[in-house]
Image 1 (cartoon, protein in one colour):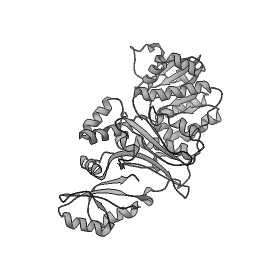
Image 2 (cartoon, rainbow, N blue to C red):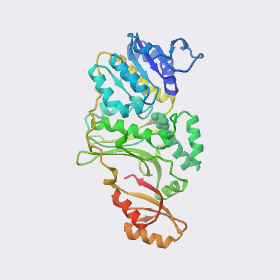
Image 3 (spheres, rainbow, N blue to C red):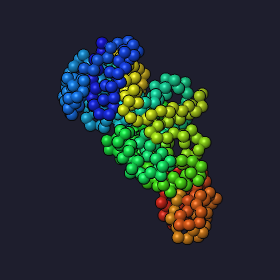
Image 4 (cartoon, protein in one colour):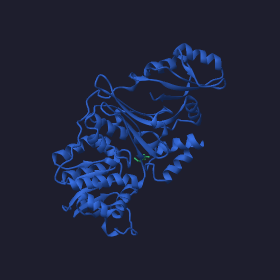
Length: 407
Ligand code: HSE
């Protein structure tokens, strides 16, 4: 029997208890050992829980218990998760976490401690909820040079966009529903402003290219400024708006990493990914495009990934799984403004023809999506993003929306 502890009994932590309890027989068979939850750390009381006798409010009960070999961290956030996880690794305990903020911010350091102590630090649940992505990427795609990863990495924003596109639902109503369904972060600004997707693309980029990409290196924009008018123009253009996390390897060996809403054409598989579902498209030189799809948020899908890592830890309690990346290098992540882009631009106008002329003067040929009225919407040709934005400046017009095109 192997003793584990779980830190955090929120949506994911309680899901982990549920999955371990409900599927105990098959889990024991696959782990080739019985998994016993010895401690659950949470500051709240859970008198109704069948495991109510195992709860503690004191982290030291876990840290100082030498019989606990694996610790699950499902608290979220950096404090106190970072100190707790680091202490557990330094005390010789393997750690499984669903905490993308922790991995994106401190992953390199924690992986190094795990490596030095011959322990596992696993985080399958940190990206894509229930979608197997970390393990397939580092194991099944290990033979490939990866050139690009593009993903719908946040269930809450995909749910909100789907409601806006399909049902014309107001942004705040859709957000409230996502919160009620347990998809959103405690502070939903992390979802709607793109930080959650940013953390996830950081983890994928670090894994794919072997150097840590930190959230502050990534241009990040969320969906808060997207309007139903933008949604309608995307439809007219032949696509939908999705929040995308992207990393591309450039010819100079540097990478471009971005998070922003983008027009996705209807012929892209990503355009079909709706509701809370996530999808991650990976381009490998041997495989070509491979897409991973599934529930990217929610209690049991995320718990499923955590428990799979726990099983892996049990099976490799004496042998470390190979999972590591080096620290970042200066200028490794380029400024996205220096890379190529195509933009959708929407402008309010009281002089439709005159302003269209100004736009054509600065941008050359563009594709107008709007009909004569109080709004001009158009798609630029491909260009360096900084140049496109300079052209916009030179028109002297104020854009209501500037949205990237996926290409
Ligand atoms: N808030 C996250 C999302 C949860 O909506 O995708 C899963 O990471």
